[in-house]
Image 1 (cartoon, one colour):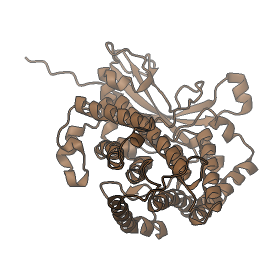
Image 2: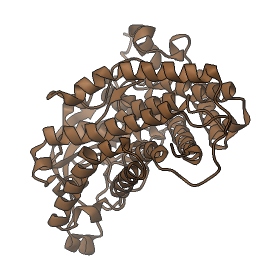
Image 3: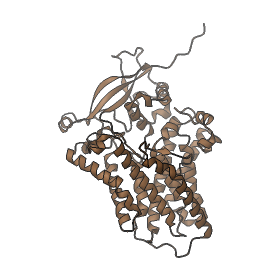
Image 4: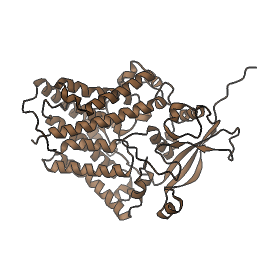
Length: 468
């Protein structure tokens, strides 16, 4: 078998970098989302959900300081792994060090509720758990672990391909990219240009995507150099997706997963055999993961395939997929506030601007991935249907009326300083579309929008009752 020592090194560094981004995202955003005064507080969640259903350190104790310590501690461990500290430790110490970020991030995801309900959270955990057993410079990369990493990549790509073919008819007609670049959750700085590519090229993109996701994954289990060529093709496809949108770390972790299938030139693995205890542990873990793969495989072959589902509370083996259906029209919820006493239509309404989601038609989208703007993503879902505006949306409006500093830090711009919050807040639904080349030249705006309807009528905080 070819030597994969350098492939392991590149994979481990890439995974450590993604861990660092994930923990940094948690550290900078948790207080407003999950904190004691957050929109979906962790203490409230752990009171109603038992430990066995969502294992987490926060079932044992919660405070905002403790959550911050977990998130920043995860950043520190991830940085140490990125620097290669595990290669300086004995083999057992390396395994324990890689176990730390997995356990810490599992604790966050399992209390993250809606904010952490994305497939790439489970994908990071599943990949991170398997990486624990990949070893360090003392041993050669275990064949079983390398095989299981390809198995994850296979399920990511093949699952995404199947959900498309079984889902929206536009994938079968090769027309989904006529809409997707415009209606995707969070466009990137190049998405406008991708949208305006010629129609035949869009069809060619979709056809190539079907080949990459439905045919190429099977080649991962063939001998080299075919497996490396298949992984390389997947990497190129993912880089294309990186350029065309902001999908947090979904594309990047798929790239990282493909790296162990590529043989990179570099120093050879140690010639000494692996310790017996290590062989036994790796074999037992591999057997466990193969057994747990039954339900994800059953889901893959089912006509009722579901996307992004975890089948165990530790997120050890999951099912993946994205965009089984594609929106034809983009709707955005725009939140506005006013300090006027009366919330009339002619009041001085001022819009809150989010970091990633479209707002001001003249503001060009920014590149944020692999960083994950969780509030912006949930706002995209709200634009699809009011059913997605759960308890967190009402809490968001309340925090804006209070001028909550932690919440305002999630935004790009608030028209009201924390010490002088608005008296009224409302939300309106707009239909957005990309401007044409001519409109872009004439107006400088990349978006055109029209008002559809009111989403939330003017709302204010309840005034305390006066004693008689």
